[in-house]
Length: 204
Image 1: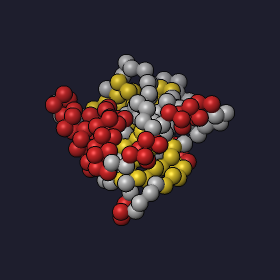
Image 2 (image 1 turned 60 degrees about the horizontal axis):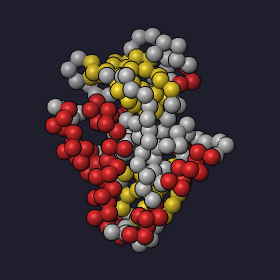
Image 3 (image 1 turned 180 degrees about the horizontal axis):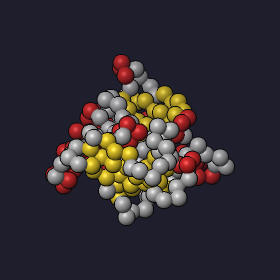
């Protein structure tokens, strides 16, 4: 069973339902503002899916190379490897306001530090990205077929911790999205991912 958090507070429980589905129920006395989605408002009955997870819980599941890396690392331990297993692995580190932990676990979102300046300086191409995949795969709750990982830059994390107003409740989570640059473009780009107070970094 997976505990679902919104805005760094407990919101509900997600469990498997029948053979291939899932079921989500809100915890008692959860404020309406902490609903996981406008399409899944607060209510006493559970929200049941016959197949897979509710769309709001699927939106940040890894795909492509990242998903395969996680499958190779965890499939033997879990015995299966479906969307529910994947959410349990990467759920603590997500883009957005929703996080996931084990039923009896507290939310500990600490992501290992990785200097973004070091990434820009070394530019070791495939070798560097393989290193980042190995280190950050289980902290990368982010979708998209193009390979990418979430990393936590120490300087950016410190700056977020001192900010008076943040768009995210967390400042110990990932601060950057790192992915190989497309179309062979040299150099690096930074742009804000405003919805989750992150930065998008492209590199070669």
